Length: 217
Length: 400
Image 1 (cartoon, rainbow over the protein chains, first blue to last red):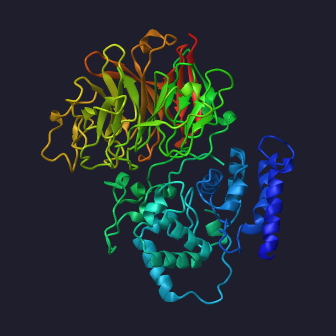
Image 2 (cartoon, rainbow over the protein chains, first blue to last red):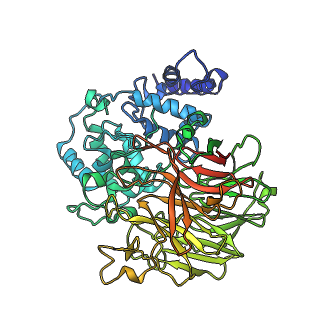
Image 3 (cartoon, one colour):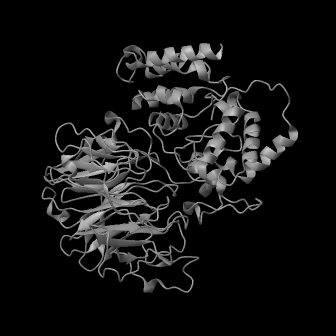
């Protein structure tokens, strides 16, 4: 799908969200579909165009949701809805969501197993990967995100995340443009140089992710 | 999905783990204040402060059926869907004002009667936590300033710009949020220690000021972090909860219940002495606990003792008259969680006897709710805010 076609799909899904059919989806309100099925459907129509049907996005700057944790997902949907995390399409998506919607989408995202990144066109630069591993230790990234970078609860999985998204996010935390649910990341990257942040993004994006072990976290 | 609080690795993220200086790191990175003194063990490194969940618990899933109260008392949901509900105060016309802390950035108003739906009257204000009502005005203290909204109940649709009465608060994130009371035309507030454990400099004190922000006076020193205080209606003495230092051990020190009997002249120990009898392993050298004011009662290890309110209603039995309710919000840096409501009865000799009043906030070591603050209603019933579940409960007494 081209970028333009995706945008069209996205616009259509926004309309769908705003329509009564799209908005009737509070859990416990109907008996037809279980809440889980309902949000699987709504994810397919609303989110999949950009984030991928299985949650692995191949769209630039768009995060992979596969293997992400529901607690993390709900904090971010909340920040988008409140306008505290700045991103126009996501704020548009999240604005009309009820609390039950936040919970429903987050729960569904939490069920998506991790999906490995497609094989890179060129093998990872061994020296840069080594540097990345050192930086991840030095700046204690592993303390929160885990030695496997799988995260947990409100800490996102970063293993196999898109490099462009990681880079943008880390730079955003450093500049203060990106707001977190807590102040953890802003303070975490305060003393990390931009070059080091880019190396960390490079490393985490190429960190092996996926498979049953990762998905079962 | 179970609404579990993070107790594992995720807890770490809340804090600032990545800034904890590694011994091998070339640059010495500074720890955040709350992490100072934390042992470098795996179990301790997985603990960090916990913010409220971003979505209130739906009304039909609130834990009211799990609450346990003394015979004759009843708990019910008074309001739900109040994200991050913290401080409770009531206006002269009956409206209930509700503040918030890290998540909602709001102050709400809820009508006394009707369906008790919360309406946002102040938004986009981080740490909009300290509130008080006095002569028709709403006082709001964030971590940086204290403001006043005049004639607030006549302007609930549009509050307008507040008058800033004081803007020299130190800000920051550690123990910087506020709790307010007004008595005899003086506004009481505290500035906590800017850390878990440190030399707090000019802070770690309870202050009072005139209502225009002038004449700031120290009322009590050596107060690490009080987020709840009230005046004994009989004696006029100020009683306050104080949250003890973190990381000493799982079981020590206790939070303190203190009483100010000589305003401005008493030092309650921080950072030198904890719970009246434990000299700090670092700051306690050369000091004696006997040189500091002892607590009136101990409130439990890492209890997160928050709101404190003397019961001034008529509905509850006589033993509660002159007693104070205390909300134990529950520990974040202790493996075993607990949270409840205590009643403290002053013994007339400077101490107080504690009795558990309400439990049921914890299940399988996870919080279902976390109590914060109180309001005694005109009919004598008691409102309790819960920032974890985003709810307000009403406790009433119907006799045996």
